[in-house]
Structures are given as structure tokens and as C-alpha cells.
Amino acid sequence: MTQYDVVIAGGAMAGATLALALSHLTDNKLNVAVVEPYQVDTSHPGFDSRSIALSYGTVDILRRFQLWSSIAPCATPITDIHVSDRSHLAMTDISAQQVGVDALGYVVELADVGSIYQSLLQRCDSISLYTPAAVERVERFTDSVAVHLNNGETLQAKLLVAADGAVSNCCQQLGMPLVQRDFEQTAVIANVVTEQAHRGRAFERFTEHGPVALLPMSDNRMSLVWCLPPDLAEQVMLLSEEQFLARLQQEFGWRLGQMQKVGMRASYPLILRHREQNISHRFAVVGNAAQTLHPIAGQGFNLGIRDVASLAEEITKQLDDVGAYSSLMRFKQRRCGDRQNTIWMTTSLVHLFSNDYLALRVARNLGLVMMDNLSGLKQPLLRQTLGLVSR
Image (cartoon, rainbow, N blue to C red; front, top):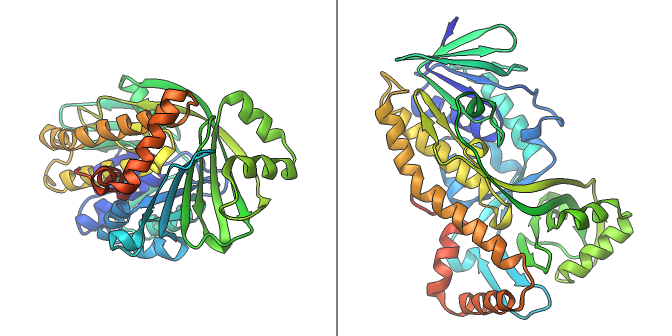
């Protein structure tokens, strides 16, 4: 039985960030094990073909953990965000210049970050990486937890952290209830090339079926997230490239000129999953294992990184027993408000902007017009977009 201070189940974005944050904050004083079922390559579900938007606040967290300098070379800055409603005049814009920052956020490809994190984990003497391996069974005792792996090894630690995705195996084993809500939408994702250069602009376009988001990437590509009812998404996935681009053009409009090229398409169902309890005895939950959100407004990953930052900070306050109940309670209390508010905000936006009922259409258009003209109404959206929220 190998001894560690912390065992992290899951080595994708949340788990790897936590391990590296603990290494930095404690100057390698904690021994950390990361258990990951998949090798980091194109088949890793946590580092797949998708891109994600890192908020200003998330970049600040990564910078404090000495991680941003490694990620920055493959990140594309977002200098403007344009929000609009299809077939209506209402719109609002947020620019980095208005806010007084270099960028509102950055777009990174998960595959790139996966390779970077893999290299950083392997070079860190205080982190042991068990891969491919998975947690098979968990035993908890008064002052420790035993983590039995499917390769026959057993790890003992003061704390087990679940960062193993939306359908967390660790949470299931320990009976942590999962609340699910099907949005009855499917996200179609792909990279597209447009006639006009994006110039760092991100777009969120609300349509009668759901939001269409385009995020700026390197080489003048844009990352597409197109939310549709499942039956319509299935039809769109079967279209030829020419038909797909024509349909996307119709929904998005001509702000970037003609849609010229689309890469490989993928799709996944949009389901809100969250656990009201994010701690238990010698156990904490972060990232998608704690909550998986609708991609509207790009809040999910950034919320998970705030989980990671708060847990890392609380762990390092009590190095003599990193799994102590007092530390876990402080973590839970710190995360409660942010988690509830962000889940409520994203769910409300889905209902407001994914319906074409006349009353909702009028309300959202009035809201966009007012936000664009009254700075007081724009500030809450701006703070959430930038990730500048209390944690």
C-alpha cells in the first residue's frame, strides 16, 4: 500500500490543475497521486477535439499557480464578445478596451492543454501519475482513505478528490446523489473557417432553436458550438459540408462573411448534472464531477477551476491533515454561493434564449437593448463573463 497525502481521481483539466496547484502552493511538500484511466492522446475524453474559453478570472488563477506561462503560447485572446438575437435588432457588445484589460478571456484547444499538462505532471517529483488505471473501490477510515485501483495497486491518503467527470465513479461508490436535468438539446461542435478574419471576436447568437457560439482560434479558425433539439441536430450532422455551411450561415448571419470550411463534426447531449453535496468524509468533489453545465455563456470549465482553486487553498492551510473535516467544510462554504448562482444563471439563460415564444422573445430583446445602453444592468453579466466572482 503506497502512501500519499492526496489522491486525485481524474487527470484531465480539473484534476491535473489541482495536482499542479498543490505542488506550487506547498513547494512540493505534499505527495499527490493522480489516477487516470486514459493516456493523454486524441482519444482522451477530457482532452478531446473541443476548445474551451478561459475567462479573465480563470487565467488569473492559472497565472497564480504558475501554469499560465505554459498555456499562453497556444491560447487565442478574446478581445470582443458580440451577443445578438437572430432576426431581431437587439444586441450587446463587450470589449476588452472598454473594460480596460488586454483580453476578456482566451480560447484553448483541449488537446493542446492535455499535452502541456502531461509534460508538467511527469516533470514534477511530488506527483505520481497512475495511468492507465481507474479507481475500483474506496474504503474510508477515521483518519485516512484507501483507494483500490483496477491494476491491483492500493493507495492510501488523507484525502480523495473526485475529478473524474460528470458521471463520477468515485461519487457513485460513495453514494453522492446526482441531480440531472435534460435540456433536450444537443451540441454540435466543429471548427470552421470564415471569409473574414475574426480579429479576436467571439459571438453568441441566439436563435429559435438555441444558441450558436463561435470562438476565435489560431489560424483564423473559429470553434463552433451549435445547440439544437436532438432530432434537428441529428439531421444537421448528416448534411454534406456544403449543406452544413449553408444552414449555419442562415442561422448565424454574415457578420464574418461567408462560411468557407468546416472540420470534423461531433455532437453530445446537453444535460445539467450537479451534486448539491461536494464533500464527504475524507472526500471532495471538483470540476465536472461536481457540476456539468450547458455551454451557454461558457461558464462550466471556469466554475470548475474556481472549485480547484478554493480546494487547493484550503488544503494548504492544514498540511498536517489535508483531509480534515474543518478544511473540507471551509471549502464547501466557500463554493456554495458561486455554484448555486452560476447554475441558476446558465439554466435561466437556456430557458430565456432557447425558446421562440413571443413573450420570451420580447423580454430577451428588451433585455439586450437595456444592457447595451445601461451600464448598471451590464455589470453583473460582465463580472460573470470575466469570472470575477467571489469564491
